[in-house]
Image (cartoon, rainbow, N blue to C red; front, side, top):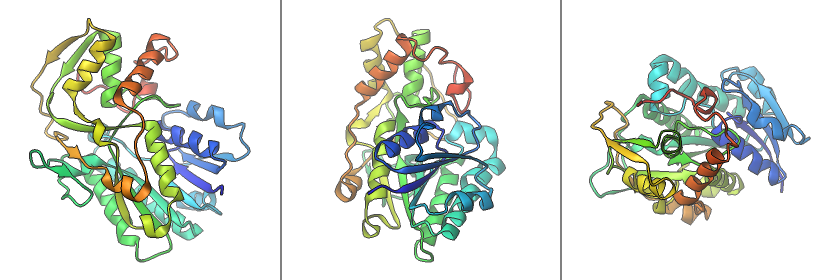
Length: 332
């Protein structure tokens, strides 16, 4: 049965991919976005009578409340994403968008009688883990960055509300996202590596053996759809890691994949310490499989191949442009 879904940050990297999936499924979709990174990603959707755009700041509770009238669910993606963006913006701005913004969206959803609230969080919340340990949703949180601190604060607010009102919150701790979307970004690890290999034939490698987890942007959209379709008993007040154990890997592995595309790529090893986000994690995604029936489908090789195609075919003609980034490169 079709639903009416509000997607905050719907013009963004994950949001535009999710909107496409939701419309394909026959749902009505309202995007709430301030279009701070442009709105070209939404152009293909304006032909749908079931699509609507509300251009507004997520702290504008009155407008949000109006936008959510009759909605069955809210997917809250709007945020300052990643430790470089938050570090650059500062604590006050990060807290306003990531924490107070979440409170405002939740308040509007509660007033409008929305029953399902899906929150996009991050596996960076786990921070450091003991060597060779497997991180689950029950593992302790050791945030290493302002970004992770803000995501944890927003999670705790939402989960604290679970027993107090009608809105059912679900928090998704996403692995590092990669791949092509209607608003592709090249400031995420895999995508940035592909761009550097293509444009410079050179990669700067640090933390080469740290373990990271990845998930394709289309699989994130599928996971969110699973949550929207699940029953309250299955997901209400729960946290789910979203990714795949098959995509728990290292930067060294990414380099090997890229060298299969461009053998002439050179690698420069550096010792780098940003003072934050120095996590090395092996993450379990068993809960999402068991409860949601969700299994990530896209491999790193497939995602990297589609990025290579987009660059080599010049479908994306100016990949260095700021339009494909939420923050400047952290290394040059």
